[in-house]
Length: 223
Ligand code: SAH
Ligand code: DHB
Ligand code: MG
Image (tube, rainbow, N blue to C red):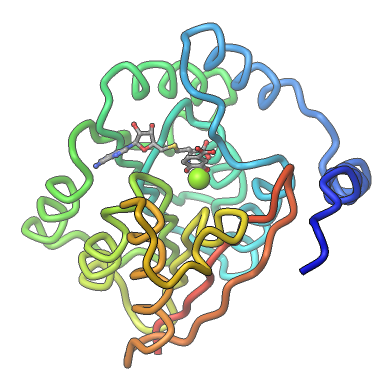
């Protein structure tokens, strides 16, 4: 196989970013605050943020569920595209991340639409199911990859026909091509990709994403 031209991949990402994702004060500040607080820089890229934003608009989502908040960068993109009166529930295990996210979301002017729930995602999801939460229009998975298959199954119980289910980091620069990965994250992502590929209730595809490396966003719609 030809070695990946990383420089070219990065230039393509920047070219798209330059055209369609101009820098924005609130989002730039989100990243600064997250960095100052020592959060890992693992948020979606600007172009992926724009993709999330467009998908929310395309489906006219009024109820969004996000799994994995970090400093609220992807949350800001998603919340900005919400239909009027819409809400976003985002799940985060780390109280410190949730606190940074809360401040960032308030500053970006979307705090009123966002409900951050602190705790392990599987518990928060089970809680939403128990309480009979209304179905979500769009779900974005981006927490620990080992949990992806479980989050998918729980999210299906919080969805309806037509709900869009998205998952970040499903290619991992090709690490998922290994049939028997040593790494639990790679195994988790492979299991997720298999699950959405053959799930009777889903129609799916992975959209490769060029960033510094090649990653992917899984897109599924419920039949
Ligand atoms: N969506 C964010 C990035 C999320 S990074 C963005 O693009 O801006 C992944 C986040 O998931 C981290 O903040 C991590 O603390 C959280 N996380 C990891 N495991 C979790 C779990 N089991 N339950 C809830 N959150 C979890
Ligand atoms: C990493 C990137 C992510 O988008 C994520 O959700 C988790 C980890 C990473 O680069 O390590
Ligand atoms: Mg991610």
